Length: 336
Ligand SMILES: N[C@@H](CCC(=O)N[C@@H](CS)C(=O)NCC(=O)O)C(=O)O
Image (cartoon, rainbow, N blue to C red):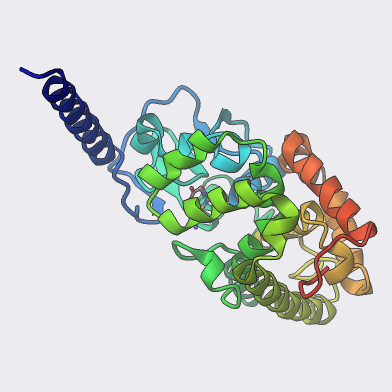
């Protein structure tokens, strides 16, 4: 047999083997949406009463960490990387056993998972909050709190597409510049893993593009500018609504005198605005919001749930974003 035929046969065999392995891996990493709330019929290995799978940077992870800190609930902490903090650990086979939807945070209570961070807040409150510490006893105020817990939630599979829906949904768009700054130091091969196995391919593609272009050139992409403008406009409207609510409640909190789960949700949104260097644009010239943000940062739970988990790459990104704006290197046509 000619050498070239042998080589061609070898190449075909290798390609077929690679394809088989890829298809097998893809089947093992299939994701599916999970129902929100406590899943009493699912049991996972646990050692502590409460276990939290979370990521230092993720908005929803911050929210449940702050909530647990407010209640003084101890938990076993399992840190899960997302691509922006280092790797796609959330789509690993191991993590998919914990959450087949491949998202953090996941809260386990005595082995049973609770999915969706706003459900986690309500669940923790239903178990530990007998005295109404973070949940108003008054029915009308309770309703106000529920409305604002909803408004601070991140809803849907791809919330970047609907920033007008909630203040939570206006966050991912405003996080794009931080992502762009963080992705520069993530190896390309790790981002490609998302292209192969993540359910939202367009996001992995955008991440690859951001990695190639770097922060400044990412900001000049037309779709990115569109997302930033739309998200900043939506966030402005959500914050205006918050301003009106704080004025009508009399403050210092959304429900008036009582700090509630709604303020937990808002705290982490403001913290993300800080990380993305958006505070001066969206908050600082509005005294009511500014006072609210100052009060939020003074809660010990802000330290325990947000400040203690600052990821070094996020801290660097914040400094880089502020420096670009100060040096007038922020591209025109996008909010600053
Ligand atoms: N609605 C969910 C959203 C969960 C979510 O999207 N988490 C993000 C981090 S904030 C995540 O895990 N992203 C990783 C990915 O989708 O690859 C909740 O509130 O818990």
